[in-house]
Image (cartoon, rainbow, N blue to C red; front, side, top):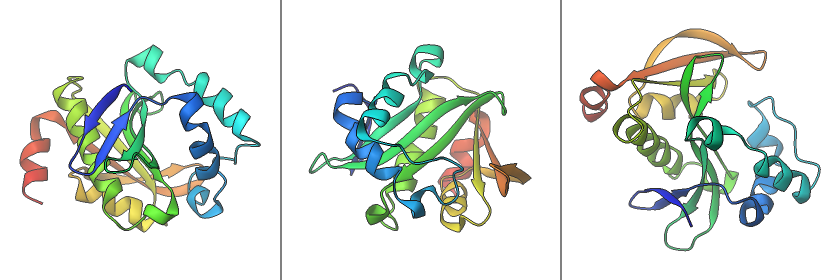
Length: 177
């Protein structure tokens, strides 16, 4: 297992298509999970596996979204991590968890650790965040982990909020939260 980040409750590791396909399939077949994403459900576990096998972020950029597991049990909670966004011209932090794990602080814990990893290990200067404005919980996660609200934008044809963190100010800002 290629662990990238370990937090008090979570392990974030590279996606393993054979191991993670069923979890990704289930995650992307919950209409509430997909409500603000613009993504379509996978047609099958096999389709999820093929998608994961062809996920180019690790190869192209050296980082990407990571499977997020509960440390005590190894249960697949969803994914979190960084990916290169052509639109933003840099890394963005994102997260998606199974609904049964919402409201427990896992998204904030995983997203904050991903941003820290991006600044400390990947030496990124800027990390972006974007969430549909109607997705109040995701907007709150981006605020809570220390990203600064920049303004309104669009995400999959929905009004969205755009956030940004700079390596030079992130730790001062996020430690004051």
